[in-house]
Length: 217
Image (tube, rainbow, N blue to C red; front, side):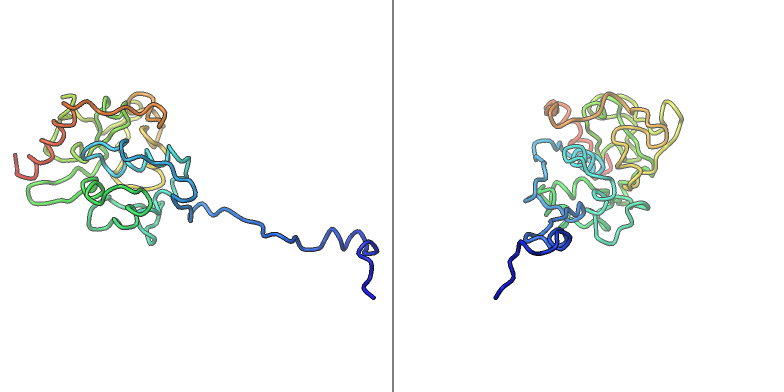
């Protein structure tokens, strides 16, 4: 005869294993199917990988460690990498962000004899205010933003720090700000609810400069 369940000591009832699985959420294994928010229309021509990852991070409230790991499984997120075409895992980024591979390739540095890139993060304050940073801003022979004609800056206006152009946790967790003193590089940063398309004239100017630099113009 089976014992009556009501006769079990209260402690045994409380300690019995649950009849349903307890799910844990591993942030590093999230996928778009579980709710990543990202839209292609947020990306402008020749937008840098840094700028793209800042938008992705802001839209999904992810840590810099998780976002850095999107570039490759063997990358140390704290040391980071220079975002060059030869070292970033394009397939991994494509699978997570859903952006065309062509867009991702254009977001990365591809040094040639005619086109070299600055080792420090350079920016246009008015572009940063729009939530945009371009690989064009990193070209050594470009001294002014093609869109706004303002001089490009690398040193923080508050503390003078020049951030290395290296995608790591330190850079990713201070979007649009100096990673040393956290002073804004320009404006209040980017938010998905306030995203606005770039002016057509600005898009054309940046595209012309990028193509021209490849030709040595």
